[in-house]
Image 1 (cartoon, rainbow, N blue to C red):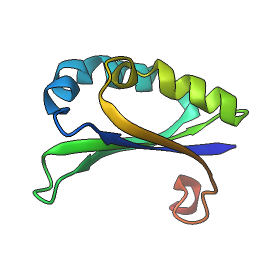
Image 2 (tube, rainbow, N blue to C red):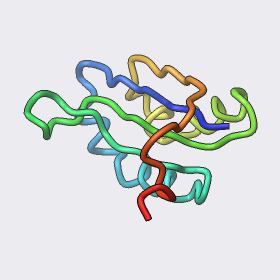
Image 3 (tube, one colour):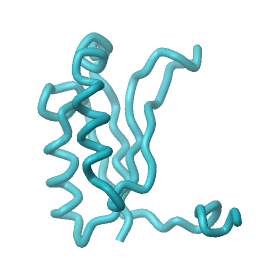
Length: 98
């Protein structure tokens, strides 16, 4: 089952994000095939990162919560909120683009 993590940074979170970004990216890459896609939300300038969208495959909501809580950004206290929601990928799957 797929789960979307919709993460919103704390208002003063940019320094935390920058400091822990390499660890965060390594963690996500380490998820292997479980990671479907991920990237930062930005301010209207299109550059200033202020949140994250991560879509993973996990066996259960509990497993997805475990993955989210182990993220270095979460451990560093970056997020004001994390919403974890089951998600159905209906359109634009990579196998559809061939």
